[in-house]
Length: 102
Image (cartoon, rainbow, N blue to C red; front, side):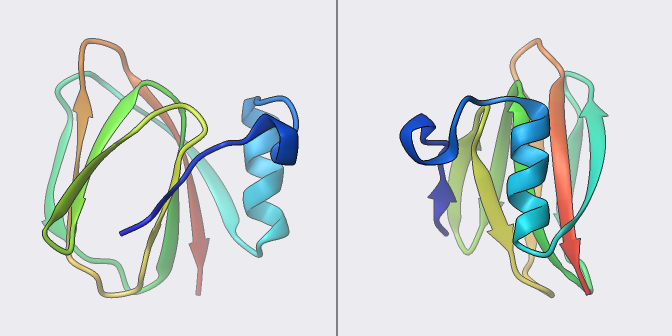
């Protein structure tokens, strides 16, 4: 499991629109979600490849026996059919961009 961090020298100034454009350039269709503090998604899979990207807040992702916390500008690829879980960490909501590919 590899987290991709935002790098200003490579990606430019961080913003929600810049993160959205980065995902779209890679061929993802992007949807925006806001998850409340305490929200938890137990183990599940998707029948499509996904990229979870965080605009703000902290999002704990568990996959392949590893756990990471995504923060603003972080992206994590979730392969089709991969079992994973997610949880909002802390008392602030998570604003997430959900990139999908068929």
